[in-house]
Length: 219
Image (cartoon, rainbow, N blue to C red; front, side):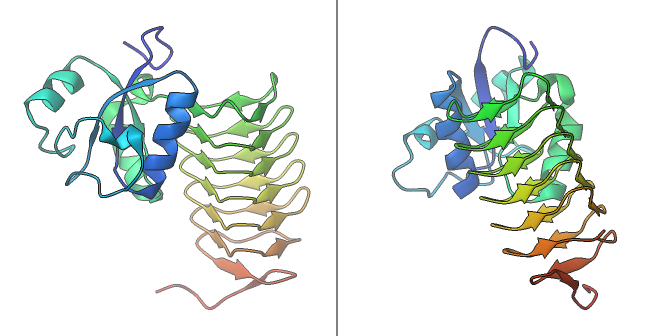
């Protein structure tokens, strides 16, 4: 079974708030959720999707979880933490990763979405943009023409990448942030919510403000 299989069944990896959002998007897009793996059952209230069976943790699935995982069921890493999405995506392999796209989005026919991507409601991915493995394009985010977004990135709600922007792996672009055309943001960087980035951002750095400026090094 692969993520492109006509059998659109799915196991979610994670059980927090982001998993609840992904679950509801997946159901709206025609996926059937067989269960979810997490350290403990979900405490999210009012999310029918996470009323699906708890399958134990990824490391120690229960009997049903072990059966479904052994059967090759598609999975989606539904957590905000980039390192976990990377770890789980590598563990299960790209052929198992389900790409979840909410039906209320605009996805250009000339863009490229890698395995495991999540695209939330009202988001836009425009012409010739590329989105890396297990990246989150969250609610209302905009990825403009020719932008290149690396693997395990999180584009938070209402963030905007202008044309030809480049975003390195595992970077977080905060809610409402704007990256101006042709800017390059390095790997493992953080762009704070509401920032306006007009020049390149070094890897592993944090920028904030309008215009965005570097903050002291993270420790």
